[in-house]
Each structure stands twice: as structure tokens, then as C-alpha cells.
Length: 313
Image (tube, rainbow, N blue to C red; front, side, top):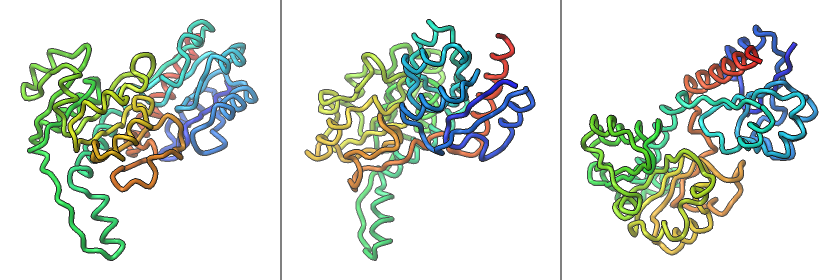
């Protein structure tokens, strides 16, 4: 039997269809023993000790060093999700290890979480809940989404869905993308395409949907770009943790330049950093794709991708 490991924290828990697919294809499947995102050391140990031919991967660091140690047996990495920033793709290509992903599956769920974050920030939902739960009848004035300019940085699969939702809700949507779909923009004439610098200056809320957090995009939202945003604006990141310079964001929040932020993704997970305990910040545990139907679709597609790739070896 082909040995497969799954490293996501909950593979097959919502629905056993993806597990059954792998087993029906003659795979012996071993699950992540920690039930959470693996650290680099844990990933290296799991990959090396089990010696799988294929992996249904989460967001654990899959470094060149790790790949070099397992290249004699590992042939396919099937990411359960969109991003592949955690995989050293150059090393994988050099070692003839195929890397696949599931780009369509999580888009709707991540877009919905993004919209939920935006409403929560504009209408102070977490603060109101906390006040009432603690016995205080304390109201904070919010803002209507129809009176808000929302900047969508990146018009890929998720960014386009977010922009469509926001347009339907009556927000003024501005967007930036280095290679925008002009066909999509023509079908959504109320979404205004601008340069990134103009978007930063115009947005009351900035939501990030960039395709990578490596190279020039690492810490894309740095001290300088945060300073270019409107005083009292909000930042939403459901894309990739390393897009945001966390120390710069904390400084912008502490100075009052930024009114708040909502963050689902972090450079280091599980998150233990300086954004904890800040009432103006909403944090969630990389849960963008955690809608049941989405998880089943992602895991099933990842399993199917792996099976097909193994059959082609």
C-alpha cells in the first residue's frame, strides 16, 4: 500500500469521504498526531519517520532542508488550501516532488469570513458583546457599510468574491491588482480599479487578498504603508500572515492611527504575539475555510489531486 500522511489539524473529521477516497485508492493513511499546525521540527519528524510517498499538507513549514531529507520517497505534496507559501517550491521542483493545491475550494468561505470581520469592525460587535456579557450597558457608535470606502488589495478568486459582496451591500469599493481581470471589472462597473498607493489613502477598511507573502510581498503592510492609510482606518487580513509587519501594526494601533484590525492568519501559528488582549483587534485561529461544506470540498479535492498524481508516477 502507498503510505500517505495528512498534516492538517482536522482532515476527515467533518466527513470521511476524503479518507475513504484515499483508502479506496490503496493508500495507508496516517493522520497528524498533534491535532494542530505542525512546527518545523514536528513536520520534519513526521515526514522523516513515516517516509510517505504522498502528503495531504496543511500550512506547516515544508522547507528545502526537509524536502532534501525525504526526497528519496516523497513524490507528491497535495496542499489542502490555496496558498503554497509554506512550501519551498524551488526545492520541490529540483527534487522532482510534485506540489498541488485546491485554489477554488476555500474562496467562498474565506470571503464570507472577511465580510463578517468588516461588519464586526464597523459596528463594534465584539465590544458590544463583551460589554453586555460583563454587565455593562455600554454602546459605541458604528458606521454604515454604505458610507464606507473599502479597499480590496488583490482581485484573485477571493478578492473578487469579497468585492462582489461589498458592492451588493452598497459599499464604495476600490481595488488594486497588478494583473486585474478587465472582463470581471467590466461586469462590476461600481468597483473602481486604482493604484495600490491610492487605495491605501482612500480606504476606511483595507482587506488583503494577495497571492503570496514572499519576496516583495513579505511584510507588504509595513510601517510606511500603514502610515499612508487614513487615520482611524481598519485592516483585515484573511490572506497570509506574513503580509503584515505585526510590530508595525501594533505601533499603528497604539498610536491611534489605526482604529482596529481583524486578523485570521499569522506568521507563527498557533498565535501567541502582541496583538492578544487588544480590544480593538479581532483574532481568529486561521479559520477562514472552516465552513463544513468548504472543508469537505477542500479535503476531497486534495485527496483526488493526490490520487491522480500518484497514478501518473
